[in-house]
Length: 327
Image (cartoon, rainbow, N blue to C red; front, top):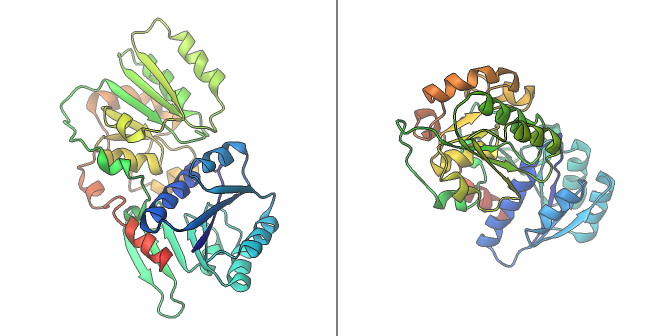
């Protein structure tokens, strides 16, 4: 079976789709080792280099027309999109002209109506887990955090958090791009709090605000707080497992931390993320960092054992998705 993956990432879209696509590739290969899988992307070399680490071929395409022409030439059995902005015209053309099984993950456009399978783990269902199959069209829809595709390592490292233990070790992980430069703003706020922490900052391949972050570190080099910057981190789950709390944005890293067993404080990058999670999971804005000292003192975090989180069954539906794609 031949499978084409189409994904993109950048400072605007973030890198979550790229990482999720790579994770799905690994699950598919585990289920069926003989699969032929290749990537198509309109993104830059950061994304291309990252996708190559999956062991699959990667082709840069300047536009959707180029994507379609390659699909037409390669004749895959499955086409899988993992991106927010799938063009409805491209999805329609693929479905009507290529006659392949079309799978679309985490997309916000009308392209979803042309898909055989859609996955919306992070939005659209108010964090309720839903499986539905249309009796007329046969379209399958997966909704809710049960269907997040989390790497196997996050099931291997688990810990139980003691709410009474002091908070010393903090990880900041705000995605591959960190569009709002939360890494810099939050680190500055932690220095200003006057408390002493061990801070681990995980920076992704698309992070661009090194000058601002380095200025904050230089201005606080006499502080007893220690900062460790990690770029291109591969052992994410292992690194998460030794933290007392993890600061993350809405998305994969938030749920990865909870799966490992570490409490989370969530910071939204933009209005879209704020509105998507409002009323369900509290998030902070970078303009609300004056609240951080009291939050840290009271340990007002989201805990893995909270009833809301346990009811989500985070990541437990991955095999359902893999089976639906391959069948």
